[in-house]
Image (tube, rainbow, N blue to C red; front, side):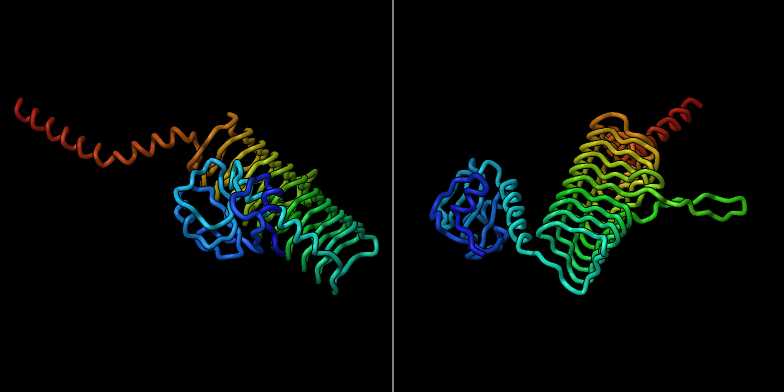
Length: 348
């Protein structure tokens, strides 16, 4: 599918410089793009590629001053990175709209319902009482347990498993291999040293505009709901335990883990491989550095922590700076000790 520079400029509210009828059919990185591809330049570090790229159309910031003429058609926008991201979103929407219909073999229970313009891929399973909204894309080998509800425009990539009674909102994307609604890790220790499983009878509630990466695991609540609130973004390989509540527009990077009944505020940023203990609260806007181990609540809005156990980020930097000076301190202390010994010997 080909798009002209004029059409693209209209989609992203940009202005063309050059031939508005130049057309492209795919995307490319500015350092590698060839004729017929669209690229973008947002990072000044890559500006030299602007004058050597083979791309036919390039999206750039409206404030960028050219150092030399270029042959490509330019589209100037206020923010090239955001415009390019928006363009990719629109392109993906166009491609998804072409994906409709029901592939066989797939299983749909008699009581399952689905809306208009849906796609149900081969080997998918829709259990009893499942309700799927309009324009939903269910890719091959997706499992939807009994009474699962899926909102409009949601995309479930191959191999996603959503257990019974869980609810997924509209405009949600869940990537391949993720499991939503598996049992929470609840076991009661017994007098004889064994563990008795605590039934997990709650569910998972995922609100609108959430994105969940590949192979994430979000456990169902013991009672009530594990909640991922509107606009949250979860990376690959993340573990969210039972009864966790993740706030609006919070982002969590890969391999992080959140223990049971923890409540995370809105706009929180959690780095990769961070771990958070159970039953704590993380204030709105908090920043948790990668590989941090959070063992107590973060009460200050916008507070930043690092380390394991995690503590104030600024204090941690001071400690690290002091730690690097330890060899010098040790040398100076040794010299002082030698001087003291010499003075004592002279007095004797």
